Amino acid sequence: MRQRKSTFRRGMAAVEFALLFPAAVVLALGLIETGSMLHSWLAVNKAAQVGARFAATGQGVEQGDRLERIRETALRATSGIPRETVTVSVRSWPDLDANGDGVDSDPGAPCDLVEVAVACDHAPSIPVISAFLPESIRISGRERKRNEPWKPCRSPGNR
Image (cartoon, rainbow, N blue to C red):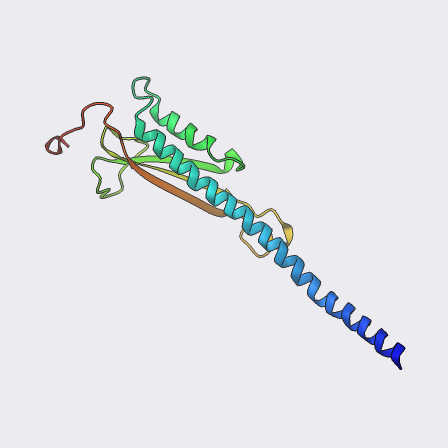
């Protein structure tokens, strides 16, 4: 009788393991995929911050390549994300209110408000999890800064 109880308990443990193991694996893989998306989100937000900080300095005004420098600086900050999935956009407003859509592809003049937006298309990499998610998840971040006065700012009446 004692031998039968021991065998029954071992069999029950095997059945419980067989039922719970797949759920535990899917949960662990889901956590890994969530961590990958979190990494992309953090990298994109940091890239927007770095790009906006660089944009506010006015570097590249004299050379005429300020916009390209801003985009390249933001792209370099997207560590671990494939460059072909990353887009960087820059726009500005002549005042700090940011009314309206702003001027696209323009880093603005001294004392203007500049925004750098970085986005990437994150493709889930774990096959079991990607079956439950879309093919691509758009992750984006943006940062706004006031441009430094590298030359005299426009007066409110001249805007």
